Image (cartoon, rainbow, N blue to C red):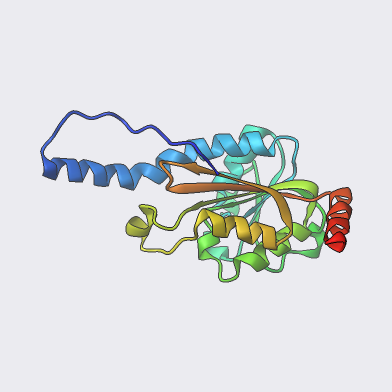
Length: 214
């Protein structure tokens, strides 16, 4: 597992009380500050893997930014219609719609070369089923990125939510049929960026043969 820590701003020695307040402020801004790093990694990863599907797109802000920066088509889905942009606020870079990530539209099947689940896996009732559905709508060789705070991170105190370990996130992808799984930890280990690839047909044949040979 690789780790890439985001450098923190150096500070002058201060009293203990002030130090705790400064640390708290840094914790509160950690994830907003990591957005740029995540965006850069996604643009690089998804290059030549379009179109892209974003699960749990919310107000479509991130999907729109990704579409504009990378220059390819991005479709976002969210089960909560209330958070989606209305016609008057609809963004032009990405197309976002209401959909259940466990039951994606049949027209999506085999359509997407890339997929993103950003800060959403921990909120899903059945993350493995969502990733299995995601695999079905992706093309062979397509890549998926899971971006989520990890168990034991400062997010648990900030947002009062429970998160998965990097190993659990990788296991979800493996269960759903993805391979070549890699994990990068950002922000001093507080955020996981886990990538998997949907096996090509030849890869699946080779894997099946190896399993029969055991």
